[in-house]
Image (tube, rainbow, N blue to C red):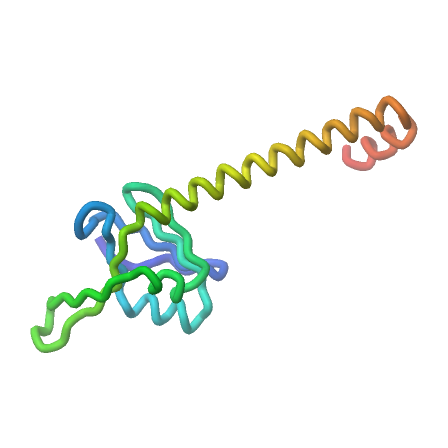
Length: 132
């Protein structure tokens, strides 16, 4: 399996499947430098869920530097690892709140249209015909 993120619409998407331990995953320093240079947001999909970061600096704020020696024993590969469980829970909480606000806005719009139908039927008919 090739480990490369997807870069699309100002977002860098990582699909991390193998944790270092628990919910602690690492991202290669090379990709974080690219994200910083291009000003990309980060979305990290893990087995536990999805975490989002506004930029690479936000990701690095809670990350730990790791060095791994693979091909060249004199030159380590640098990773930045962090535990994503807290970030996943924060994102889930934010998404639930956004959904609640979205539903509330829809209910308000429905109540406004219902009142308009009763009080100003000609305006309601014009509005309905313009959307159909």
